[in-house]
Length: 313
Figure 1 (cartoon, rainbow, N blue to C red):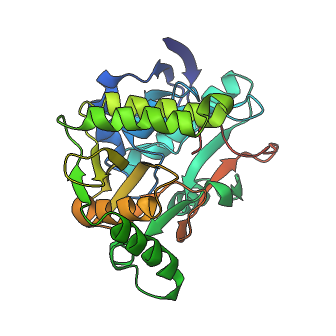
Figure 2: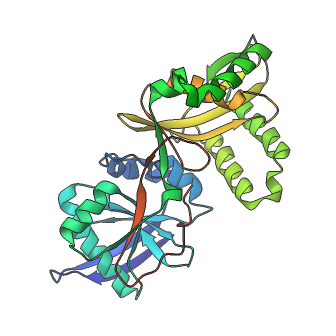
């Protein structure tokens, strides 16, 4: 689905802004623009955006040779991301999008804005934006060494759980996920869905849909994964899925383990980092502890925020 809007720009040019639904065929185009961003954000990677776009409708437009995503706030108002592209093009895209909001008679909103981008907004539009930090939406960034060694008092609990897992399953094995075993992860996820009663909870159901689709499209989305077995050829006890975010950061999208297997979660996390990451790890906010990478929202002065943007993980 596409929607077109014709906007007049400050330099008296006219531009048609075309918003498009995100499809698998857009991976290369979207990836090329997102690769120009050097900031760490778990949300701004193609698999995450694509997989969650059914639950939280998100579309995109190429504006002044930058990429802009459009989502919806909880109050139903549109909101966009900071344009991704060459820095010299971003102010032009910003001007075009402000004209777009005006043409729609909507207040201007942005989401998933990084600290470095706040500074640019203030430089280009001094005093024009109100900035609101959304701590609940912040990502967690971990140093690889801390996740692999689990050294120190703060992480002794995870170490104890991992030691218990190794004691209970002395023949355990780790495997990278690939064409030969991804179906086993899919079947494990179906069992996990039943145990967790996902059909009784809308958010759990949506998360499980994303998990199953990530496994179905594992190769097409260019994902990496790892799994744990109790013994060689044994059943899958846990798996995780992620991908490189940029040259120095790896993002973990999904982790699943059976609740009755003590230590399975910290064990798959540690082994996945050891074998697949090798760089700092970024995880979506919510339930873990670590260093936060702040994100926030920007808005022209008359607006009021009502909480998280739809689609934040």
